Length: 124
Image (tube, rainbow, N blue to C red; front, side):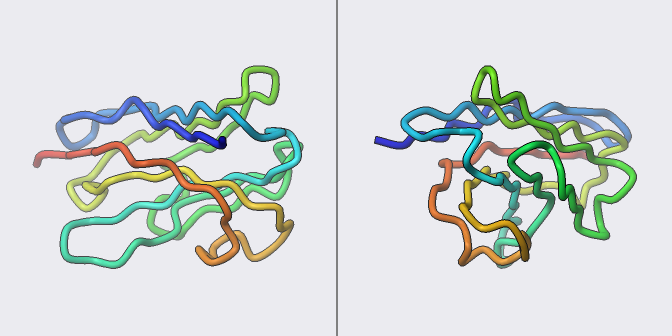
């Protein structure tokens, strides 16, 4: 059974940082590209960032470019999202997801497995 478990969320003030982790099990981690998505209250889930199987093909949403950094460690089956200079607009539930595709990472429908999410709240 595939499991993806996010952690690292919390309540911070604007300008501070958080590091999200997504520990996976039950799949061959290195065979999947991985992504982060987020969903704010009353809004649709949106793409944040993605990374290819060998840490290639990294892409970011324009809203987080230059502030967020995605990475992965295939040795420990874990995906990360370093979030710096956080803004109140970054407040959302953050989800990690896994896909076998190698392109169009921003499309949610391409992801096969999803975590349950971790709450990030940024106060002004």
